[in-house]
Length: 251
Ligand SMILES: C[S@@+](CC[C@H](N)C(=O)[O-])C[C@H]1O[C@@H](n2cnc3c(N)ncnc32)[C@H](O)[C@@H]1O
Image 1 (cartoon, rainbow, N blue to C red):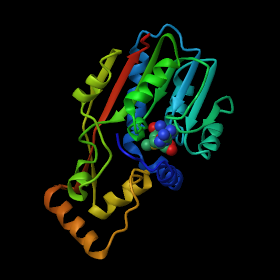
Image 2 (image 1 turned 135 degrees about the horizontal axis):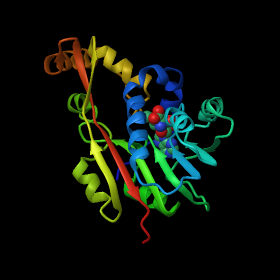
Image 3 (image 1 turned 180 degrees about the vertical axis):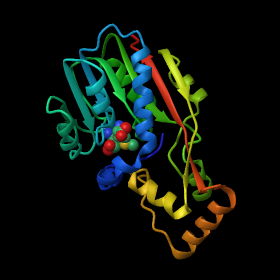
Image 4 (image 1 turned 90 degrees about the horizontal axis):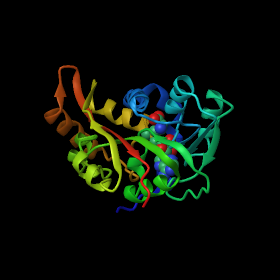
C-alpha cells in the first residue's frame, strides 16, 4: 500500500475540471468500451446503479443515454462534480466522498467506475467493500489503468502511481467470479514533451505529488523524452486501460 495525498488528488482533479472534457480522450474511449462490455453481460436487472468517481460525468451520460434504471447515484471525492452530473440529468443523485471511506447501508444492482480506482490506496479493500454493497448476483464493472500506463513518465521521472498488471489484477480478484478482464494499449501522439505535460495537467493525472520543475529538470525531461519516445508526429505517450467485470461473491 502507498500513501496518497487525497487532498492533492482532489485539488488536481478540481483544477482540471474545465479542461478535462476536451483533453481526456482516452477516458472517453474507456467509457464507451466499458459501456459496451456491460451491455454484453447477463445482468438480470439493474434498477439501482452506483457510480464511483463520476468526474465530469462521461460514464454518467453514457448510462443515461444507453441504459434504463430507477436510481442512479454518482459519487466523487470532489463536491463540484455535483454540478456536472446535475447538468446531465437532475435525476442523478450526487454523493460526495472518498470511495475508501464510503459507508452506505443500501445495496445496488450494478456498481460502475471509469478510470478512477487506480487512485485507491487499497484496491483489494475497495473492491471488497463495493462487493458488499451489491445485491445478490449484482455486478461490479470498472476500468482501471494497467502497469504500462504513462510508462514514459515513470521511466524518466522514476515515480508514478502503483499500477497493476493484468495478471496481478487477476490474482487480486481471485476470490471473485471474474466475468471479464481485458486490456488494451493506446498511444497518443503529441508535438512535444511539453505538450505531454500539458495533457497530463489538463486531465488531472498529475495528482501524485507536488512537483516543481526546475529549468534544468525540464530540459533534461524534454531531451530524454525526445530521445526515447519519438513518433512520426513528435512524441508519444502510452495509456494502458484494463476493463474488469466481477459478479457479487458472498463471503
Ligand atoms: C480520471 S477521472 C475519471 C472521471 C470519470 N469517471 C471519467 O471517466 O471521465 C478520476 C475521478 O476520480 C475521482 N476520485 C479520485 N479519487 C477518488 C476517491 N478516492 N473517491 C472518489 N472519487 C475519487 C477524481 O476526483 C476524478 O473525478
